Length: 208
Image (cartoon, rainbow, N blue to C red):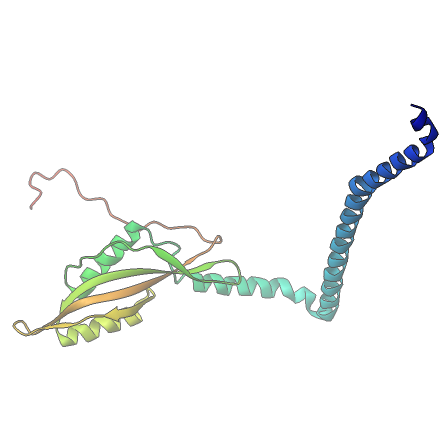
């Protein structure tokens, strides 16, 4: 006890030093870092606002024309998007294959495909592609017509690859086509399910 009494000033100094270090580490430094981060955030916001103000001043004379121009761009974009389906669910794929069967005059076997995003557009919409592999059997003239139909059809589709085997007995070309069916997925659009007619009921003989 006598030694502590003799060195009380030294002990008090050490305790004050420890307290100061704790205040520095636990109080001042975090507050300083937080203040510096806030200052950096404010400087970034100020820089962005200054750029926005400079741009607004640059186009001040045409500000009143921007709403109409924006509406025109949106209308043009939507007109383009309307040429593509919003989704290609399994029922859409079935209806497309039925359409191809009627177009080609042959029965088509296929397996369901999945959509992959090919490109994200400037407005956030996604240009997607769905791969379908279908079979065909036709003569040379029919093959040319089939490719022409696919190239000019309103349903935007590209032929990724094709196989061809010649059936000498029937003089037919047989093979498979790998088709890429395009779609645009956008929050500005709603999915429209395919229009499927309900089958008739009440028949006595289903084979009539």
